[in-house]
Image (cartoon, rainbow, N blue to C red; front, top):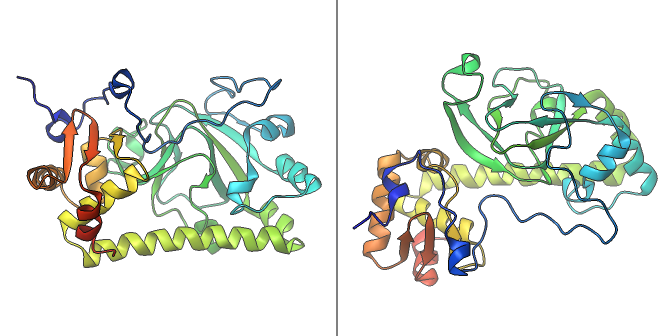
Length: 288
């Protein structure tokens, strides 16, 4: 009889794409499904940019960058959007490539346009070119900023950023150009402040969980975030990466999941997790 929870014991195994075959509705974690292509529009190519090269191209930026979520839902005027597209560069990364390194001076604002990136720590530093020792703390999906505050402070990045998929397309907005653009535009500047406040709130929430919740409550809260409005979701991150996000060891994470299974709150089938009692999980998180 095969082990029904292989990812609890083997963090290096790739995710098993079996849910679709069962016809189960799942919530993709952490990357949302791509938006539909408008009628008559050309689909975005699989690899739109040469990997590793920064390209400044207004037509390409118009095609790949959705500024609205980056500005907290604020819709830019056409002239402002066109100007922005001329001020940023686009770079494509392959899985494992460093977007920026801890200790590197922050001179740009970075955001994900396509694929998925991650913020975390690379234990072996610059010697690990392909980030094989990367420990994920937070995944970053399209329409989200990678590190919105460090450049404004004139400091070095305190985390590494790594591409989690191939390709991951990232926009690079030089800080001096961002200052000039925002200096006379109150609405976009306020929207960017709102996006930055959202990142601070997320960091504060994570810190609060670490300081005030035990390991079991943190795992329950993680399950609720991953599932969202769904009952079933697919585990796509390595156990050690999830454990790092929750500030627990991989062994502790596995033990907490087994406890939740024994209580009848969740069911684990390979890489697919079913929430059996959402109410009990919410109560366990202590967020009610």
